Length: 237
Image 1: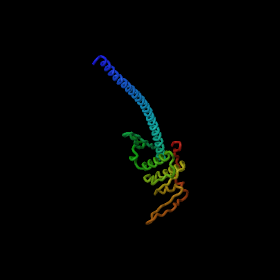
Image 2 (image 1 turned 180 degrees about the horizontal axis):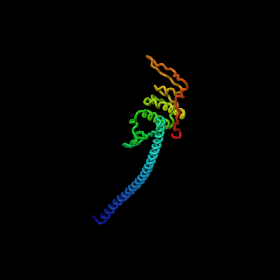
Image 3 (image 1 turned 135 degrees about the horizontal axis):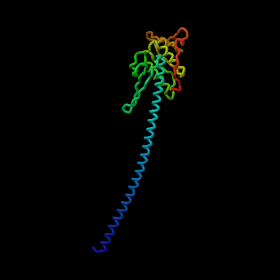
Image 4 (image 1 turned 45 degrees about the horizontal axis):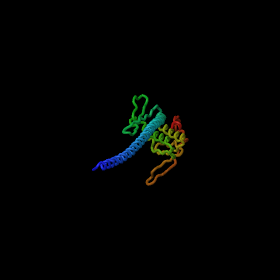
């Protein structure tokens, strides 16, 4: 091979190397653009994650605040109901707990003269559980938005409440019905609760059918209910 051929061979090899180099530069430019684009997308995602984290924190703060507000309102409503009916200061206490990322609540009663609050199931007679259950149902019904229309139907809501306090239960239900314009349909074997109603019916089973009669009470039925003041208003709900 003479010098001319060698020179041509070197030129050809150089041109091929140059073409590969140019192609490599092109691929490098594409890779750099892809890296730059990916980095921009990562920044955008980081920004979105940061925003979502802040929104989540805001929701949690808002949720915690709303939950605390609801807790305090329910405690106030139920405490007022207990104190009204049992004629002594009773404080309803809700303890909120987080277990495995789930919220739970435990209910206690705080009473003067007793050092530690006790569970409502540990309450000593007097139908405390009945009144707490009744008060909670009414509180949830009144607080729910949008408003749930229709009557409040109660089945033996005070079956364990002693006769000493049954008049107060009647007064409480009457005041709830009037103050919140809510009809109450009550099923009960207690004549005192039946006497406080505007309309009262007695249902008796006779063989294979039920006989329905209008209850007749002597005098004004509302006079049998002792007046009490109840601090429960729309503003507190």
